[in-house]
Image 1 (cartoon, rainbow, N blue to C red):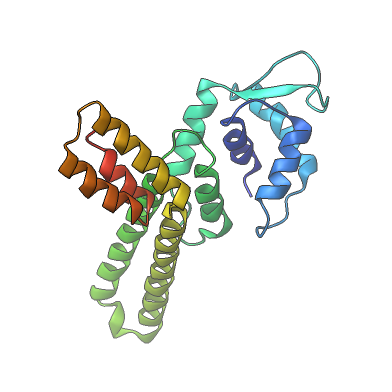
Image 2: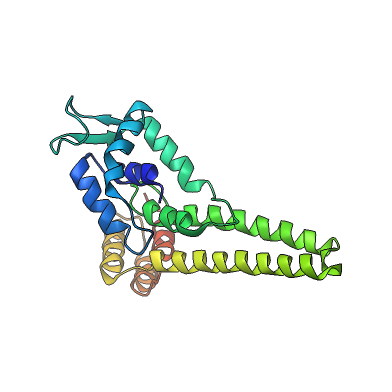
Length: 220
């Protein structure tokens, strides 16, 4: 688990103390490789020296009253990391971590992050397929290795598709909120009665966040 970017992602949601960061990391990293939370304070020191986080006072990182906030440089570093694909040979926990953290960073479109990784993996599959067509199939060893890599990359892409559908799934509360916004737009004359009826039907049956965004995309 990349503790530096995990800390930046949590701080993107607002200032936090060291103890709170430790607690949130333990909670949100469940199901992944265990995190030695004693790393939090040294990591905060390194991030502060790099100008990626800023302490709110002169107290030490391990002082429970000390809070840290992400800097503009830290936000740029985090945004770049979220969209930088891990080594396709072993995406593992790093890719899972990026998708989980992307959902915690205000202003980050998790769908766009997922699609950036998906595009990179598709390009890797295309390169692998070209290599196989180039003659590797004439030798059993390279042919088997090529097929194994293609299937492995395909499985990661399928995982991303599953993650996208799970993260994008909307609740009844999300549908009701979108319906309320549509009624507000109707009240000020931005939608006709027929348009309102059509969009309300679509909003109340929407399954993903993308479905709801599409209904409101042309409205201020």
